[in-house]
Figure 1: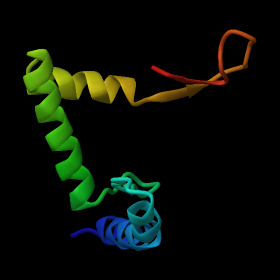
Figure 2 (figure 1 turned 120 degrees about the vertical axis):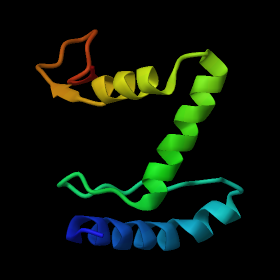
Figure 3 (figure 1 turned 180 degrees about the horizontal axis):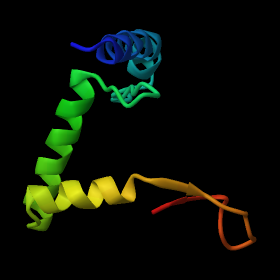
Figure 4 (figure 1 turned 180 degrees about the vertical axis):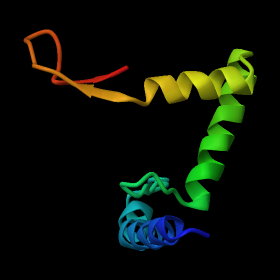
Length: 92
């Protein structure tokens, strides 16, 4: 595993332990997804995204490659000047 992956895994574990008790008391199922600023992600992140994509494929009938391309395109974030009808952050 790369250094970025190790750091992301450690961050994931810290977030999980910090939030687990709170979520259990509130009966909330919470899955923290930790990314490094350099783009590294934990195995749990990759598995969760894969499962969600497979579920969406079964629900929508779209192929996995189509959904992955669409998700990659939509995950880019663009900041711009806010207006009354338009928030400052837009997911594109």
